[in-house]
Image (cartoon, rainbow, N blue to C red; front, side):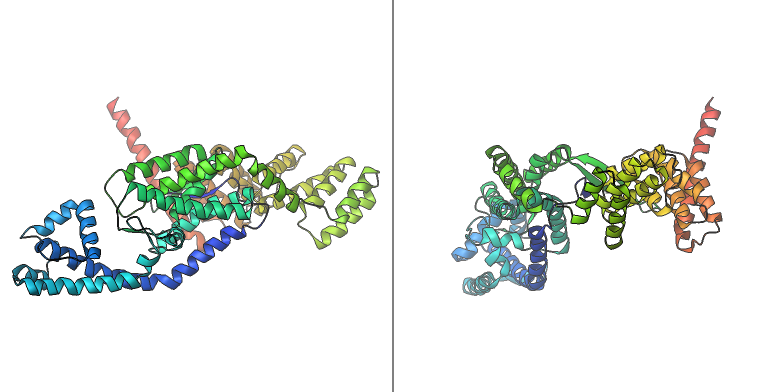
Length: 505
């Protein structure tokens, strides 16, 4: 199974209050309606099944217009099942009631049975949340273009839609502003319903879920951020390392997804609104193009920038002015006082580091660089953090603090520079043999050697080093044992292949 877990730009200029509000609203509606919808759906399903079977067995029975619509829709979309129901020896539903209905030949009794089910069906349809607020192509009501977007059929249906809403939504909200973003989201959901109705005219199957609106955001995401790298996770086994991560550009991933939806939509109906997804995606893409070329997006972005533009604190401005006049000691004192209250200020540390450079204090410059590297890692500014690390090395630094270094080691691994990642893990482990980070570093190197570089001998060496370490590692025993076992198995396979090749020669 392959799922997206993030992308390059997991930050925004402002809190994504609309996206968070939509997610909370969807969860709230689901929690308040799900159990009722399940009960109503079960009751309605039983009545529908009996109506269809009775109509198939005894086609001469008179049907109400509502029931006739149900039967006609089933005949059109499920002709094979309808033919099976009509067969005298059908086993679609094998119970006493079906057997009794097959033997019953009293027209009045049969009509009474159908009339009873028709009455139940009408009552259930009138009271059903699904039927009142879901979108139905055969008889759409204006309110359902909106309400169907906030109903979901189950936990996985909800969680999947909300996760995709978060990934695509908060960056679009940041780019477009809150009012326009909300309008596009809701309109995409409505258009997705209508597109599904065009693809399935006359269908009485109810359609629910935010996927059409979310697909609209995905289409807009493709137009707005076509080169954005999306991080994917591929679950493939249950061993020590049960998943693999890789990156895909939006211009590859999203078109593949929508083409897959088109392919499924052209196949037999499977209960998923594939055409709604396609419609929402097209709407979002076209809207994003229109916003860009109309100039509205630029205008809105400029307005947002004016609202969120960063203004430095007075202490930062004062320290900068002092440095410009060569008064570094006074500037440093101002900055150090400021950092006492705000130790995580990247601006203050950057300015202080610049002052150290002006005074050629390399040791102090390196120390400030280490601090900035850690702050950049906390802010998930990975490129800036790696640049800090490279500068630290160029100025003669050799050992970063172990916690910061461990996070740095993971960056080349994420970028699939596996040789560099193993090298960094090894240097960390050698530099801090008595720290817990050394164990995690060796396990990280073992994982890469085993899964990425086909070096089981090195993987075994790293795992055995962790096993022999004096650093407490009871919580890692299971991972260590699994790693050793997998490495030995891989080595055995390599030896077997080598022996076979030698014998053949």
